[in-house]
Image (cartoon, rainbow, N blue to C red; front, side, top):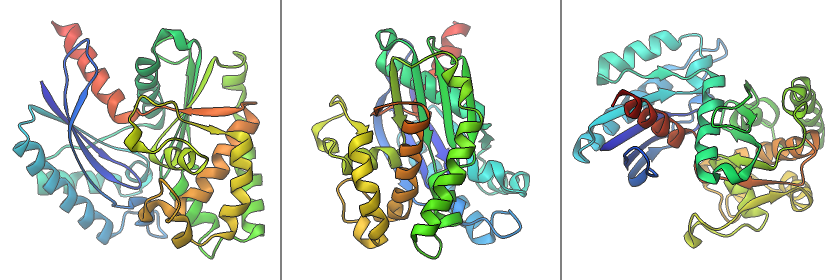
Length: 310
């Protein structure tokens, strides 16, 4: 069947059209996305602004047309951290429904972590052993670990790359701001690190998301045109050489680095600091990049559900 997945993230609205059936890998057929930056459209009161709501409605309306034009039998629509955390989330969802007919589901952070873990497990298979999975978005970081298809532990932290950029680097990436972010971030990560560490070192530590893929590319990973099967990673040693350079670079200079898009340039430094903290606190040498993440997890879970009904 042909499905569409509408992912309203903190950075980007993304409609992914796939051809999928039970027992096979989802095959991407079309992709439509726009940089909504909803995490940056939260007012001082914690509500999504009028401008943010209007951008969201416009994108969802266009996505519905694309999904219909591409012959999608169903649309799986969800929103993550930015809408989830907004004080007016119910009003936003109601307005989107009234204007577009799309009923966006709010994904809790733990569910986001679990679905991403499912996608990573299916990508690497059982031979990967025990997995530790780290997925960073604009608003949150999801962490999960386990040896099965469902993780033993899964949780979400409000330390997404866009949120951290806004919180610490709104006036530029000063050394003082970097030290402050680094200290507070590591304290936050360490609070629940034992959930994962109590099971011992993972056989494979995996990172997903556009931000982590961009950081891997900066650290020397193969470009996207070499295909999805090439192994890519964020090595701790290489990452540590780049963070001081990123601190000294402007966003426009960062945007010129390989694998970085201009609309995400401001998130690369905070994302790199998060990656370094993960590698340190969880005693890892590298994070391997998985091309599948939350959207694929949503599709796979839906196929599993349909297969169980047959």
